[in-house]
Length: 514
Image 1 (cartoon, one colour):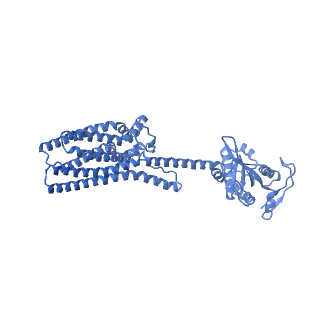
Image 2 (cartoon, rainbow, N blue to C red):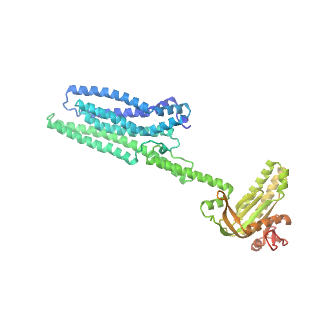
Image 3 (cartoon, one colour):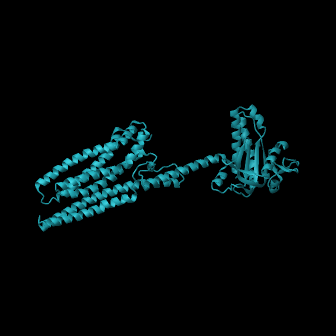
């Protein structure tokens, strides 16, 4: 598993296990410090006894909150911590435990918010009972703290925990998880960094106005203290706003950068990359969708490459692009058949491995000759090759390409026999037959398996002409239709008219000398 490679030390294990706990505690302490700073300038002429009581209650309450919240957080994180321990020790956690841990991990930011809300709500109630002005301050500080804790815990989870528990992404597949949209996240951010500070400053002005009406201090002292208080609060709120904005921007930018990175690879035709998914909101869903798309493209390329091993690349591309009519079309093309001579007796006396080596070497050389001249291999039938020129993509001069291929096959066979002689393998011979005319091209086969094929009299006659190479003891024979088109370019030797199967009249064929 990926996790045992990521958690490499005990320090890293302890750091990852307690990041959320420490992060929330820091947010609570920051909120308490914010309350203290604001309280100092709002105490007015409160009695020393009240200030002392409020101070003692604050210390006691903070200690109790830290202990209780830590216990609840550790209890809630128990499945997460068990899985982290398994990752650290290098074994796979129980699948049910892992699923539970994933669910709790994604819900933890909301659990932290509820925990902080309860803590700050109870604190407001206690300070309100004793009559301390810190109660009202706790409301604003609590809102800031809850927002800060939520985005910080989310940041920690995305940075350290989500890559461990979701190495393949798929956060959206976890059931029972609360999802907050990007719109709501930004609405919460705007509320925390603008509405709360403005409302709090307005409350500050109102409270100092009340203090002036009660003659607790002179007008000059009141204005001076109010100015100082608002300045301090403004700086505090600006600091919190900058930090929250950075957290939200970082949490949003990171998955977007991942998506852009993968899209750049996809644009270059590289479908091997996957976007790391950090959240289960719209941005995370976009990352998962992109991964699914690249997976589909990767599978399509694999199918395309695999398909190309059995069907010529041009036929493959035409079929995949939908340019080959599955119900058939009549096309003018040139058909070439090539077949090894005396191959059946060779099978009986040749060791299997050597026989396959000879056959594959021959077919490979013939295939290269066909491809060099824009021909398409339709099929290998044992030791026989069927190729077409001018279909499925029409190529002008397909008759000439077929004849050039036959001559290239002759040269390649000579070179192959030379290599065989050096390896102590007997030479081989073949016969090539070529005919041109109209063929029916279609996807032919059963409901669950079909192949691009050519049928018709042109195909049958080309096969018969190839068979005649044995009778006339020549390696290349062409039909009269091919000879009449290329007689000015090549030296054709006429053969005696002969009968072939399927033809009522004798046909004329020509041997290609050069």
